[in-house]
Image (cartoon, rainbow, N blue to C red; front, side, top):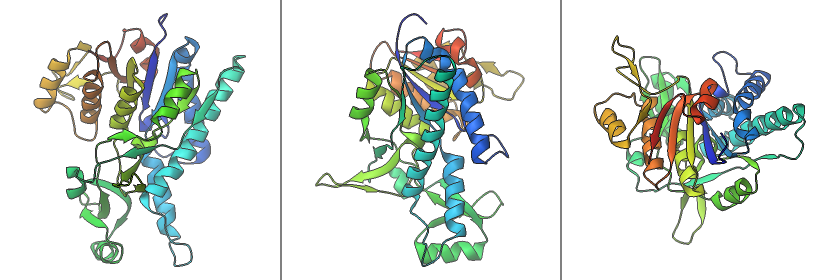
Length: 317
């Protein structure tokens, strides 16, 4: 890790919350453990920007909002809940970075979190086909009621009940990218674009307005990495590498692969939607943006090895 690089790290949900451990204290402990795994990148002098998922946290915020929803204290729009989650998770991560560095005697390195807006296109086909479940489960009768009263799109969810579903459009632009780039170039550790960014629409006059949608975190990270001109997009998940024939006797982990080979695996349906598929697609979109780029898919525990080329799935342009 001698050559200093600009690295955008995309943290999966497992890097922030473990099953059955939803308390603030538990998530702060996980944040501390996560940052400990990223310290080798920071200590090597790389310029690091962190993007995080926020699905469980937004889900919990929405549940709180629904539980207290009254005329006097109405529930917040989904985009507001996304903004709240960015501030909350950013606080956990930047404090974890501060404490980890201070423990090691580093007092001249700073971390900051930025509430980040991501422009999406109203013409994105996702708005015509909402698929991302959010919030509580309803009975069919309750679902029809909230659909009529609030204009929600609701769908039955795998026999578990009915839920609200929202669109998942592709990111077009990160509004705060110039500020993020200036900070990263100055050596500040920046936490931003949480949950892919707060989805916003830009009208003909340039004004922004929030929209009830969810942007895939990995696509948001790829957009940020492209905008920053990053050298590396590091997508961290629960497995050490992308795999073909997953869960079968012929399962095979992918090491260094070409963009063409990875696209062939995507076309063959090797990766599950909502799981490894968006990670591989985000990796391809990043490396397609310019030459000399590397996208890596691996686990948090393999971070240092992966950056050194000794672990993970690696795609180069």
